[in-house]
Image (cartoon, helix red, strand yellow):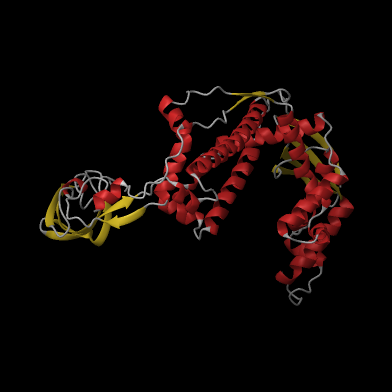
Length: 462
């Protein structure tokens, strides 16, 4: 088996001419005969016992050629590709057989190769890093969110009318043309008034009623509603059982002790600010590093074969399907629920896939250009990380994972680290200064707890 010729026929496509000698092809033909003879009937012979010569005389000299070709094809093509030294990235195509007989086989086929890459700027890439400053307003919002998370829902004991933002506990049943409709009934349903959970006008008509009231709510279903109810007038017969309110705790030392390791509001505010600053710093670094890599990818000049993009999309779709599977949902069911077809779904990954392929090509070129290498010490350090992550003995990890399989990822990481270390980062200026009011809040000393003081919600509840 040998490579007769290799010629570039178009961008990223080469044509290979592969020759298989007569002796090799004859061995493959005989192997095909031995595999197929049990299936062939020849008069005068028991099934599977007919000599090859009789079968060829009866069905033609080339009766086993196609099967023989299948036998020799993988090895012949693989050897030819290796001999060509081409970086083939997809399955060969456009197979043509100009010669096939006792003297051997000549095959012509096309292969797609990795594109030639012109690397753009990858050293000294300039990127603006987001500001990591934390304003007093951000601290306040974070603490308010914590207060909301620790809020209690309490029943309003005082017999007062329901108002916006109350939680109304109701029974309801809907009727269209005096007939109850499916899905229009609920009992002890907790509805936050003003949340917009129900159709327009429903929640507004509960406002003003008191616990124990029974009343009708008249609404009109929107035109874009389900076909059987769209645009129709409806009456909901309702009963308001009780009214609840959210009781948000006061920000004081007792609250701080309950939700943190600190004793005072001042300490808690400082810790929240430090936590937000650390989070912003990590996010800013990650975003800036990604921006550097995106610029490197954008600077790459290459005609990328469609198969490289499609393979990356395949990986992304497989990853998404795996995540769905972990949640107990298969991707076909997901398409059914979302009304999306596979083609449109794949299209959504195309831009992302193209950017990643460009970045991968850039990384490969940077590794070559900078002569980056992985040392034994690098591999040993990676083994240690695996051992710690999986809580296994390092020797067990070495048996399960070969050093050669680790090298490509380590090389890629080295190249990425090289690009980021050689990038130029500037921190963006804050878009707005902290408001005077927020600044005052931050400077103001924490008020001492007043035992007699009640939250607005608690007063309202009483």
